[in-house]
Image (tube, rainbow, N blue to C red; front, side):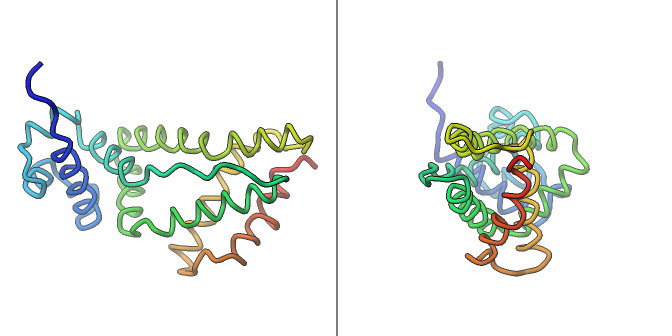
Length: 189
């Protein structure tokens, strides 16, 4: 029983986690710092999140909880253009420091890696299931493991474009990614 959970406190904790993660990185992030930044007691944070990995995963989920667009085109190419455009915007809008902190944290903390992979698998299914099902229903022949190929290649190319190349994910880039990389991979040869 007790008093109802304060959702404002939850948001303050998650926002504090994201800002500190970007500022100091995963290794230096502490529950004490999150408590200080959010104004919540450390015990309040531990009641909600069993450890730092769970807290960071919840914060990342909170920040990036946007649903992919519903496929509406008459072919796989059209659906992919919309989906990849959306994915590129979602990735490009993330703070580079946040992405770096999460990726670095995943390499050093198996719990964080497990939590983030759970989130990524869920998001992958939400992104690819319907467009690929629609393509199959229309009679388009897909390569075995097309969903896994999409999930492995599309985000990697987009992250490379944004982080390494420092280039925008504009319409010509999205078209190139779909026409020259994804469609040849996803369609059965």
